[in-house]
Image (cartoon, rainbow, N blue to C red; front, side, top):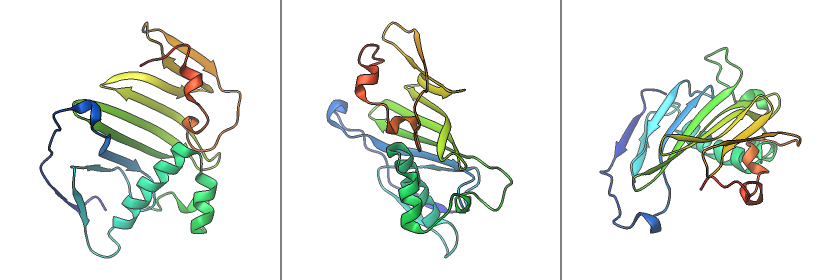
Length: 181
């Protein structure tokens, strides 16, 4: 699939960044179906072009999968497709976890969400969030850490069960006292 062609149109930057929506600008996925170390830069308008069986549908399924990770709906997503967790990983590699990264852009701002999904536990065991190249959130070794407004890290032990991304259960209230905004 790494040979798939992408047709892109020139990017246009709106004059008022505050009113512009976030746009998916970059996708990386490794060990998802036929996608191994697959990266895809995206413009405001991008088309996937390729032969039958080249992985176009896998790219779209990967985007859908990541949205379900964020929402904590992995089991339901698998059931809808009559898939098992073992169906997610690539048969082209011996890796177990699925790694991913998405970049969202709004004008000159870039938001990055990256993680590693464990098919056995159906959750991301590692996650990172960057805003404009500054790490502001991470999940690692049973804790989540986020940057407060003073630049200090708030470390919290994960004491709850979740599916997909930890963001599926964390709410704005979690960050209200120590906002990184």
